[in-house]
Length: 187
Image (cartoon, rainbow, N blue to C red; front, side, top):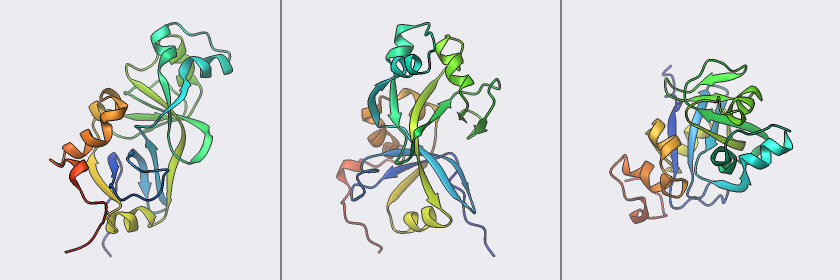
């Protein structure tokens, strides 16, 4: 039996016809994908919340106004009260998952403590919630042309402005996503 391809460390680019408003024009980093399903973080939907508000809520003193002004992202519609931090490699945190050699996801508060104090990873984004797929669901969505997929890069995850990530991710494939039809099909 052939094993299904893993979408770990892939960016899922919502096709123009995406009907679900939770995912319309999104780019989602797949952090884990296995036989049980997949977990991803949307990386291009900033909320009106910023890190300074989160630091205040957690009673953390912050070292830098620029860090405090950074937006928190809407990571997806599942468990919207849970925080996820995507960041450049750093081995100092309790509950981290290696997404790639260049990107980690940490679920423990210690990463927020480090970010607030100015001693965090070189690059990071904080998201509330995640996108989740049951076993076989992501594979079915890929076959239905719901998503385009490209390998993730630290530049797309951390550096490209949020409002440009959807088009920039599709540009990796040489596609101007704005020119694609919202109607999917198979030839």
